[in-house]
Amino acid sequence: MINRDRLVKTFCDLVRIDSPSGEEEAVAQELIKRLEGMGLNVQRDDYGNLVANDGGDNPITLSAHMDTVEPGRGIQPLVERDRIVSDGTTILGGDCKAGVAAILEALESVLEDGTPHGAIEVAFTREEEIGLVGARNLDLSLLKGKEAVVFDGEGPPSQITSSSPTYIGFDIEITGRAAHAGAEPEKGISAIRIAAELITRFPQGRLDDETTFNVGTIEGGSVRNTVPENTTVVGEFRSRNLESLDGLTLQVNEVVDEVRKLFPGAEIESHLHTEFETYTLDDTDPATQRVKAALTELGLTPEMHPSGGGTDGNVFRLHDISAVVIGMADHNMHTTREYVTIPDMVDAAHLCETLLRRSANQ
Image (cartoon, rainbow, N blue to C red; front, side, top):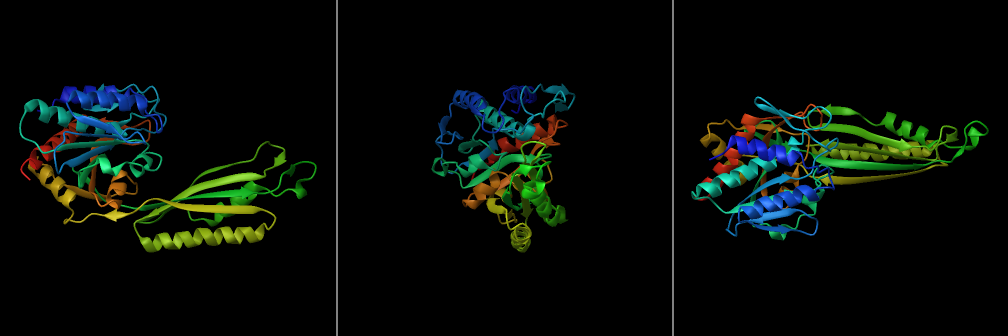
C-alpha cells in the first residue's frame, strides 16, 4: 500500500542531498543503499548511471534523473498542507526527485505487500539537466526493458508528454583584434560589436506553435578600456517541424556568412550540434497504451500535451525503447517558486505501482 507519509519523507530526504548536475555521487550512494535494501541488484555503468533490477524478464523500465539545476544547494523543503515548497532561496528539486521518490515508494509498496508484480527495472541517470548527458552515455546493455516510463514531466501523472522537439545548440566563437580603447580604438576590431551584429539578425523567442529560438549567453571582453578581442555567443533552437529546423540551420549559417563579410579582419567560427531528436506519440505506441490503461484503472483521465523540452525519454526512443514521459507532481520547474503537490505525487506512486502489478499478468 502506498504510504503518503513515507513518500513525503523520502522526497524531503532526497532533496536535502545536494545533487547539481555533475555532482550526483551523494544521492547516488543514498539510492544504492535504498535499492539494495529492497533486495535489488544494483549496477553502475562507466558514467555513473544507476540500473537496478530483480533479475526478472521483460520488465518495464522505470526511470528518473538524479541531478537538479541551480540554485540547488542547501535545499530546505517545507510541507504546507498539500504542497511541498522550498524556503524561497533555492529551487525545490522536485525535478526530478519527485519522480525518484514516487518510484521508490511504489517499489517499497509492492515488495512489502508481497502481491504478484512484474519484473522490476529502474534506471536513474546523471546530468539530464545539461543536455541528457547521462542517458546519452547510459550503457544500454544493462537494460532488459523494451518499454520505459520516465517520471520527469510537469503536472500530475495523468499528463503525458505527447511530443518533444529536436534541439539544436549553437556556439559561435568570435576573434576580433584588441586595441587600447582610448588611445587607438581604430586599430581594434570589437568582438562584442560583431556579436551584436549577429544577435540582431537572429530570430528570437517563439517563432510558431512548434518552434523557438534563443540566444542564451554572450561572454567576452577583458577590461573596460580595451577593444574586446574574444566573444562567444551560445544559443539554441527547437522545433517539432523538421522543415523549420532546416530553415533555421540555413538562416544561422547565412547570418554568420553575412557578418563575416562585414568584418573581414575578424574570425567567426560557428558550431551547431543536435542534443536530442523529436518524437510524437500515437495510440499504437506500447508504453503509451500501457500507461493510459493504468491511469484509467486508477480513475485518472490521460491527457496528452506537447512539450518544448527534452527528457531521457528522447534518448530511449532514439534507441528503439518505447518510452513515455509522464507528470510527477512538480510545478514551476527551475525556479525558486517550484512546488510539488503531494496528492499528485501519491498518484504518481500509485501509477508506478499499478504498472508493476498489471505487468504480472502480461
